[in-house]
Length: 325
Image (cartoon, rainbow, N blue to C red; front, side, top):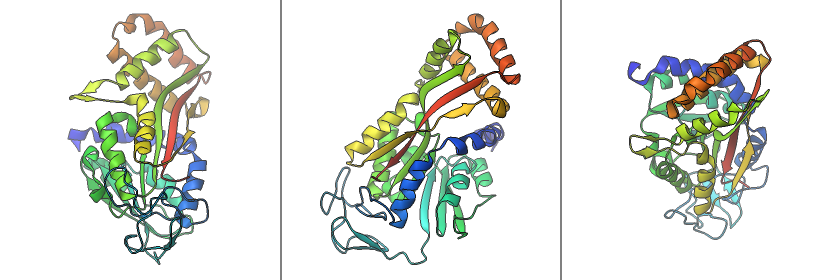
């Protein structure tokens, strides 16, 4: 656990969890719930339930709707024609693979919003975070049980085989830490399974302070450059990751719905606001150390305003739902 600096990061995840829950798009959850339960318009799979795609990257077998031919719908699925799939799930739980689970905030937020029994598979590289994630398990919207298992490993090396049983793939605040190649592999794995993907809270480089200051934009630009830095030979996408993910799903022929999911931080979240501000500034100064002398007064003023309840900040994110129309 020490090797992964679990404790400080777990504290940060705990602090931000209520703001994350408030920011995430409820509209996308409504679309997802309709798809999973068959009560609304289907997406790339053609009906209210996920299908299992066959073929290589970008392939859509069985016609424009992307359905498998009759008899090839995968376990628990009966294909009844293009644009129609009948569920044979019975009591089989929905299987959700959550990438970069951290301490399990996505599980705690989304599982109670979906009906029916669920089995969540939590993926993370940090065993300490996974241990925490499995400690508090919610119940589904209708009171059905939710089962949790964990898998430690490198998210950038996941394949469709690793996600083969998924009815849904999720991730929160993850995409900006990937390179373009890694986004391509993750999206390829999701597309290969043929189920919906819900990726939320991807930073997009929009930060607005009230009151504003001329230094805001300069520090924000340095922060964005830090997000796009090269780490161990990997060129991180940072605020470009959400758009890159949309484009990658498009190359696989999958529709993507995008909705904004900004944090709105003010006096009611003063502790998170100060913690976010310090991390935002530290990243900017790591990228452009020459800003330190010019921002000393700015930093003291911003912190004092935040602690006094006179500062609000809107931090832009996007939520993406792929494979559902």
